[in-house]
Image (cartoon, rainbow, N blue to C red; front, side, top):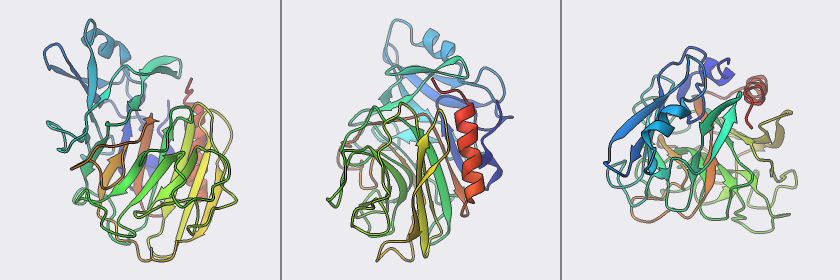
Length: 313
């Protein structure tokens, strides 16, 4: 298995429960905790650059239940994500069940991070490389078009360190789900949109973007990039085959220039969740990464080619 081309960019965070995102990565992917005795176990890869060691999880969790407490950062920046709840990153949410969905990647068994309402993960990365202010950044995630809802908000990306809705541009995160924030949507989704705080944007305004389309395949690649001052782009694709579809590539919405990113990382919830409230969204996370800088279309195409070659089934 080869590393994702995203790793060639200034990668500041790389997360997955299914595989190594660098060809040389031989560390841990995530941590599970079992209910029988609250013991924890780190789940690594079968070999450097390979898929998750699902057998280790199966053995550790046999006869009891397990939850995923940490998703480790493979980038070397230490941006490990803990669940938002007591004993984790703090807050009111809970960790996701570790065995809700199994799949195969490259022919090997793996488990997804299967987010249900009330599950989410968070990391304050503003001192460990995550872009802040108007600095440009890009991100992608592999998710699922079959496990979605309209609850706010199934996100992966840059969010508030305060875990409050601090205003337009305080977030820069991929959203995937069926929420039609401003109304006027065409169809029922799910859609790849940008959560920029104070709204989920299908394009460069609150009006519905006619280039939007639903992604209903079992495995979906979602991408977002933002230069921080004038331009952002949203893309989606089937994570098993084909290329990326550009849904928007143009001006930021009015009121979002310059961006005011704070540098936390969110996974599975909106930015104002879950220090004091409970997350309402659901979705599936297989892998994702965040880079500093504005990725080229060629880099994004190479990432998609790597994802489709990984063999998600």
